[in-house]
Length: 502
Image 1 (tube, helix red, strand yellow):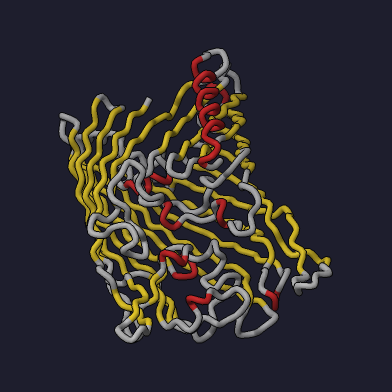
Image 2: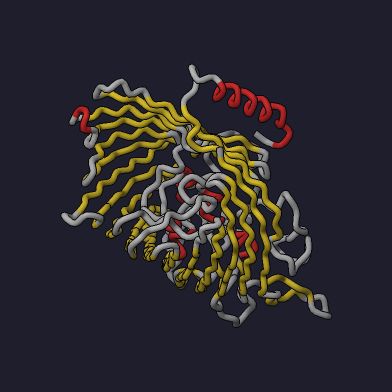
């Protein structure tokens, strides 16, 4: 729903409010919150002065800077009559104010069967996710997770990706398998009689993703080994030389982790909170522990997909992608310290596109370096609800070195480029470096203060700073000739977030 459908949004909210107010119809309200931000992503720049326009501080910050207003609502229903069979369901909705959209947030129906009866420690279950199963991902840390909805390429996808899942859970072991479906436009065998020369008919077909995983506690409480993997049909290739050939993707992830005592949640991070407010709740107060507790997890992921081979026209080839992540935390009483480090290859960052050059593997002459990053964070909670926090981060961005071949799907701005700093899947976040220049380390830091009152009301104020010397733009010299030059690398942001949970 877009912004011109606000009446529809209002009707949805009213209907959901009425539904919750009738106990005979609705279940428990398990997660509902309202967030209100005031933020400026870069107080050093004004609107239109940089490639990423930075308006003044406002209550409606630019979409994507992690401080957008949103309303989150979760309703839960469980029918437990003391028998082995226990059905349950959850309705999760998010009203995104900046985008003007009301969307599903992984609602589900789950049918549980407890094989050990009233002990309730071993259960078989079947789960249905009817709208969008983006949260049903592979991998274990969000930074290198994969297999979400966008694994089915967004430019050709005509639907969300619902899923069905079958599994078994116990205290020391779990096993599951799942299937997702999505509608994707792909080339048909029928050719069109078109005077403009476009003879390809694209039709909508169903494509599948298969997921599975298992985990086991290795004889020591808190020590787990977990693996998962999947195979995805990502539609068909739209490059002329391999038009209609299937795009397959598959891979696996593994994690070894250990946690002692109380679970230590992830660091205070508004970016993760924006993606999943229930899982990464930065507004929730920390739990005090009497002893020193810690957790550590090491994860590795390997992916492969079949795309066009530009060095051998008319054929396809495999592109391998690797990623790894180390997450650790230690807590003593009210002090928490986090240390995270990650590695993502360039082909992993562009896995969902698919490929740095869309639908093609990297040419033989290209060189790439992976993204390397690390974050050290700490916070301390006082009895009066105040929690000061801070973090320092360092990153060496992923870089492509080479020439992007011209062709039907090659972006004009990238053709003939020697060095490209790659951040994620959106070319709008990439930087083409000036000729002869090399990539530089990116430094970032933040400091903030959170105040929590009666557990459910929070105010969070934050100051962030980033020094990114890889940012470049095209500028004309005195002779009118355009050159790529570096721009001010300093980015200074402020944000205040008020949040109430119900």
